[in-house]
Figure 1 (cartoon, rainbow, N blue to C red):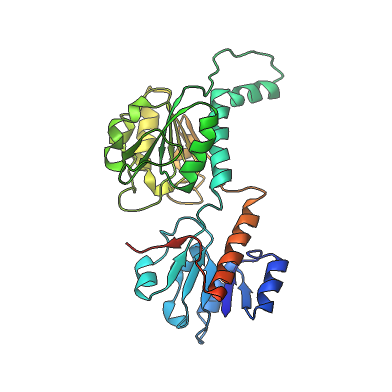
Figure 2 (figure 1 turned 120 degrees about the vertical axis):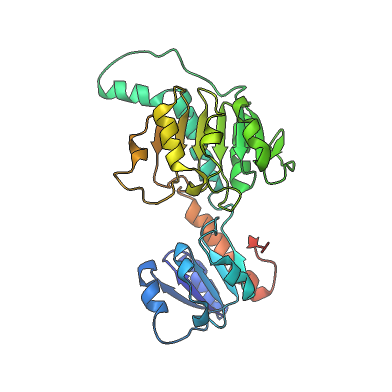
Length: 316
């Protein structure tokens, strides 16, 4: 079997050696070389391609033997998904690989906010000893998590330890472990004013794009924390900018994703009060690469052994 890896380190040297002993032909190229590689005059006989956002430009006619696509992200909205399924190509994502570090990131943001760490850090820099008594604890706080999949569940699992009241939102309101109650996405706007913390871990689709708009924002309660670790196109950014500049509420927004990444240094979001932006970094940890390599190695060996693969994405 011939496999194209777009990036170094998608497999460990030990894993690569093991696969080659199973007659797997591995070829590795860098992301920056992908377009030139693909634009050559020849066609390729890879059965499996492993990559990420560069695959939005995949020229399917170049790969007549292609049977499998393994992406290294959980989201796959950047793919020409209809072409993938129309050609009978099986698609697999990296769901679960990044869920733990993202969940820890969300917990860290909430605690940093509630414990006023920025305030104490600024005082430390200024050599000021000024106590702060207006701190909060997580005990008993109500949290609404949009997205009850792998990321949302890992967040809920950890917040349960803090004795929070945790509800979820998904497409049909189905019950999910670690959540007290779950609600339909289409109805959730009517209940958001009941929560202290709102977390978004949603994929991008026709139901979620610009879901957070002026109508959503006006229903938020003062002091609410809003965290987005899902997709940037969830938020109508102009509506958010207007809300941030005009609202007297003390709603705080923590955005690890935005519409256009990287965010232009002149973008108005940088200047908005109560908006804290990070560069799509919540997934990173000292263990996520090992998890990704294990997933890729397991799926390649499953193809060879004709056994079930992990994380198959099904067409609608």
